[in-house]
Image: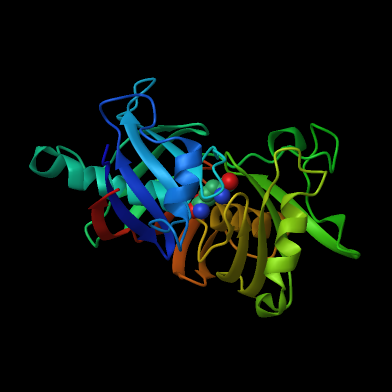
Length: 279
Ligand SMILES: N[C@@H](CCC[C@H](N)C(=O)O)C(=O)O
């Protein structure tokens, strides 16, 4: 059976989007997602995202498979792409500029802005070790600037969950990090029972951070929305940045705010359709 898809990206973090609104079961399996994401033998993407019927009062449900077939709880760049995809699918029948999306990390709300950007209410960051999850500290403690031995070197790490796990390290120069060798060692470190996404952050000033990322289940990507949110939170917890900052990723810029009013994280960035097809 041929399945229609749309290819989108958010700052080069690219996804295959599938209109799955007629069924609560993803139209393709995790094994098929691995093949579809293959950049030589498939369509090529960092993940496959399904637009499913809403759950728990939400307008829609998002599920996502990473390019290795694993299923993460959330995806920041992906949910911006999903917002744009749903607007495209609804066309003239669309009645509002935001969607309440049920995810494995709770309900997230992407809003389509007049300038074409998508702003997402990403919810509350989770900071306790058991919420990350990590065994780096007692279950009910935060992991802020804690030493972690990886590849014979001690890294000071801060851990934040945006529904999915992130381990953040502040470095002098992000360009000098050997991401392809060190990334997998963080991802599979035994202190992270559900593996982890890993962000390396260079503080340019209190409102501008440079980031490179190794993603759980996808490897090096050009951007990670949840990673950018988690990194801003880590920067605030370490008093290295303010609560509003621009995050520079290899694929472009994201604006992140950790609201003092409701303590929620707001992420603003682009979502672009590249092409559509049948597979
Ligand atoms: N690129 C995404 C995150 C996708 C999920 C991640 N690989 C995980 O396994 O947690 C983003 O933009 O947030």
